[in-house]
Image (spheres, rainbow, N blue to C red):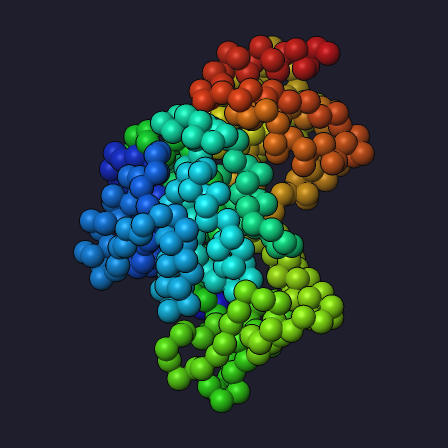
Length: 387
């Protein structure tokens, strides 16, 4: 199993931005390598890392572009480092092929993408939630992605910590889907150390017995050796057997892809996270995530003061999509789910898959760069309640 240790609890409260908090959270949990290329509105993460990593014995490299950046991060991961990069929509698009290599090689790494308006160059200095499906289906092929969505500057810190722990535990790339507002806004943040630190599972056999993708435990996660040590091994982006060697047979493809997907699907109870308010008696539930969720509590409180049975759910993890949450809403007898997104309809498609559970699904979907005001949410919530 992955190894874990508990950091001693200490904390200091400072005023900082989401991007800086994302970087400091990564350092706190052990990140010691960053490779990246400047792109608005994520560049502050690279700026911060260029100053802080040398102070803690780490390495910062500004690469020539995003393609080189993610290749360097995959390499650093196999060299034994906790490694990350940060980017935004166009840069994430450029990283797509190598992120797929990361999934195939089962390289633990973290990508912070600070979402901005698109498509193409779009609005580089503004926020968006239009990359939700990109984070899930970034690369080609079958694989499962873990994506976290912070709503506050504090969560930028906390979710960086959690992203590294999940990446190390499940040997997989993990994405933190921040945005241009939460990334650059300032709030008080506790740089606490009251968290568990998880490190990747080491080899479970001596060097002469090691197979890089051999499964010994029932968690479907192979022990990971560090390149350049006594453990000599070969890996490839091709379909491979447990030795890491290419194997193009249908049987190997089926076995490999199922394992890559199932190790995440089976771990959904450990990975998926959300918060609820007034869901137990709710007839109508607002579902949201990220920066756009911040106006929902006020709108819901206002509606409940007028006697309406409404509740809210804020997703902290977008992927794997929390099927168990939808099933819970169905069992509770929720009649309507209103999905709010700063895009023209992305995550709502996942919610619509569960209409058979007895609730209708509608969307407050605006491809804007400005989060919804509580008054705007309340107005549309009342339309939904009274429909």
